[in-house]
Image (tube, rainbow, N blue to C red):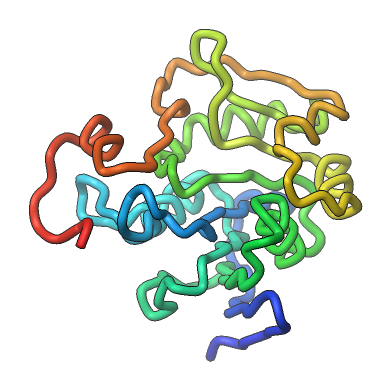
Length: 220
């Protein structure tokens, strides 16, 4: 089926219909609308050890976990032809950097109408382990947002419930941290053994720390 493109002054979407089984009421928003100035190249296209890009790996992991409705919010300088598309994937280009991270999140959530729960996965943490995704999903009805933690430290991804999704849609702030907004509603933490939930890969040094030295022109 050919892709359908939607657009306004802030966003453009390439939409594919969701198919398959798994968790049909649950979606995922992948946030990759930042300029990646500290990294020197867009993090969505950075390599994982298996050769997949960060973004391709994240999408693959969520599909393995049964989450097939995925919205990817991109910086306008990321070439669309480099982005994996397929059933259930919606690509939204954020042309309004002034709207901040919450603005990107609103765009992504708006691209997934009808979901009751939604994971928020930052591009700077590409691991998205299916076991962690499943543990958060099992706890999805415990609170408005579910956060993984490792040795008491909160990490990513975060799973939003309907109340949190609605609150984000209603608020108009552009500079309010997501954690402060979610603190207005009941939250629940799930302890996991995977320390990778704490990863925050924003510089070439961060990439080396988590993956070891790389070669080639990844940062060119």
